[in-house]
Amino acid sequence: MLTTSLYFIVFGSAMGGRMMEVGGVSYGAFIVPGLVMLSILTESVSNASFGIYMPRWAGTIYELLSAPVSAIEAVAGYVGAAATKSLVIGLVTLATARLFVDYEIQHPLWALAFLVLTCVSFCLLGFLIGVLADSFERLQIVPVMVIMPLTFLGGTFYSLSMLPEFWQKVILFNPIVYLISGFRWSFYGVADVDVGISIAAIIGFLVVCFLAVWWIFKTGYRLKN
Amino acid sequence: MQPIISIRNVSKTYKGGFTALKSVDLEINRGEIFALLGPNGAGKTTLISIICGIVNPSGGEIIADGHNILTEQRLARKKIGLVPQELHTDAFERVIDTVRFSRGLFGFPRDEAKIEEILRKLSLWEKRNEKIMALSGGMKRRVMIAKALAHEPKILFLDEPSAGVDVELRRDMWEMVRALRESGVTIILTTHYIEEAEEMADRVGVISKGELVLVDEKNSLMKKLGKKQLTLDLQTPLAAIPAGLGDYALELADEGRKLIYSFDTQADDTGIAMLLRRLNEQGVDFKDLNTEQSSLEDIFVSLVSARP
Image (tube, each protein chain N blue to C red):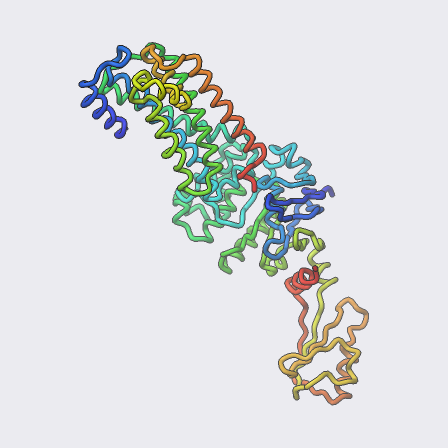
């Protein structure tokens, strides 16, 4: 909450008032969806990866592996807990933003759907990282070295149309662009990429992560040896 | 009686190519205490881990209380409790919470009376509200046992239960294991402490280099393989065994001050009377004598060291 407040104080209130509107939306309001995404993406990956890495590191994973619990139930437990926490953080971030800037949500159900899908899919990614990591340092590599830069470069603080033409094409390889664009569309009805593509991208990402996690539990890869 | 655990042709080769188990066959009887002995790296923990679902087998089949551990995982695992060798605990959890969690994880409804009974039995009731990190090593071991018992298993695996435990606690634990057996729980323990197996086990299995070398009743094993030794403290040290005693299994020890005779307790004639007469004839005097039976440890060492 403190980090989010600082972002809104600096970019929303202090600088935002001196900046132009983006797509007919004040700059302070424009960055709200991106900042919510920034917070839930990093939290989802960190929470879920830490959640499974800790029992692996401490050895308490033996109890889960020897319990009468199916792979689906185990994933639902770990990912569900992390995703719930991320969702709450996302909602708290939204509420905090309201203290600093006015914004509206044109499509609240779509906004909620984007939030839930993003939380679940990135918690699945975090779970994968927690299973693959073999040290606390490596656990932090993806959130800090991948998620954070991609989110900053994925349109959190700007519209893709502000970039030179060449970079507008390059940035489309950044998957976070589709999340932020779709989520921002649910707020203001404006998007950098087609909202259908955004939805397809997040669902595709979720399916890939789910299959990978399911395979890990099915085979016991890095868990049962 | 139908065995509670049937292990058929179970093998395990790890990714790096190390073969931890080679086609192991074993049956554990209902209600017994079975001790699995073996040196480090023999495959004891791998075998236990496979039965409990922590490690995937490379081949073979295991039936636990009538359920295949791979195809009827849920039913089989409900019957099994595991106390691992290492003290894996949630350091920041309270004792009572972690035991409640274990019961819930195995699909059993909340039962405060049962949790209290388990904690009292393990002398943990007074510590129930303490965080695990604040407990001693011995107490943490008790918590691990309480967690394993929380879902009232029919089969309990104790992997090196006495590792790092003081003598008093070890004795308490043995009492607890016996009490569990009395209540109908089948107990399989691995141990380095032969004394532990000798004290508690009904049957003993010896595993070495991934193979079960031997499985037998403890008492029968000790009768079959246990040697008895007669030790004579000589009046005058001998430089060599007298020529006239060459047909006896004799050896000298303690720089010729002791003469040791090994004999078979099961034989019709142990040969002791004749040996003593022959010693007298040879003029070999002794000031004291005593006999001792080889321990399970001696048997274990001879079995394992005899393997190529």
